[in-house]
Length: 159
Image (cartoon, rainbow, N blue to C red; front, side, top):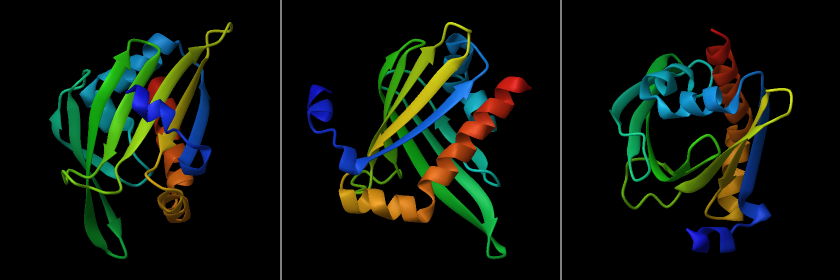
């Protein structure tokens, strides 16, 4: 894991931040519960279908994002491997498709910073394999879709 942080580069990074009106324990718990993840994770308009969920350090979450585009239903397979989890503080995942040699896999670090007022600042930092790949996912809508995901989390926490 130290090697990952030695190679962290702002040219390959996307950072998304959201202030949530809940304790970091509650926000962190939403990431650790596979049923909850399936309810709030992902861009607006896409449903999550979990294939396998072992949400722990060394575990994985294999799921499909499913939605209708251009009049037909499409399925987007995803796989998150949980590299490191520090309860209520930090999650590090390896994220991409289920393909073992997916060249577009990236790392995502999620931090949970509780503020004095009880709110939590959730930060998701993505590190893409190249500057070009970062540019491609930004062009595709990664920032907007990521913010929609955080909106989904905020709504789920309010329910």
